[in-house]
Image (cartoon, rainbow, N blue to C red; front, side):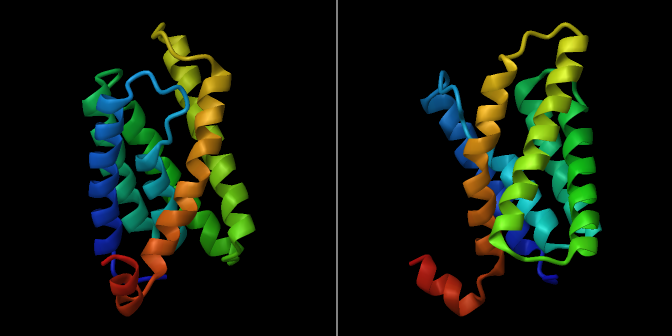
Length: 162
């Protein structure tokens, strides 16, 4: 476990900015990666439960405020996701990239499915389920990237980012 959560917060801010820019530039992009969710999952795989919970709360709150649909839905989903993945990672103990891929895919699909069910039950028009699941698949490489960026040491980060 890393003891420096500052990198997770910096990645969350960067993901929010890029996600917002992607929404403006390509508003009709069907399978847009969920960079904010990828940061939450990567944080949960690298940090303790409290940091993961707080990053999940902040990420979900940003999504709720920016989307304007059912305030609290994304906040609760990402907070629970961050806490649960961090708890599961502590018990699992594997740092394999293959395990990371499968865990990220399962978590993203479960989060998207939960969001889809709640929005459908309250009558909010949502994209078809296959589009949401496709967006989950597109997001998985970003989980690997963000997890790697959280693990790189300071000297390696200077070489990676000029």
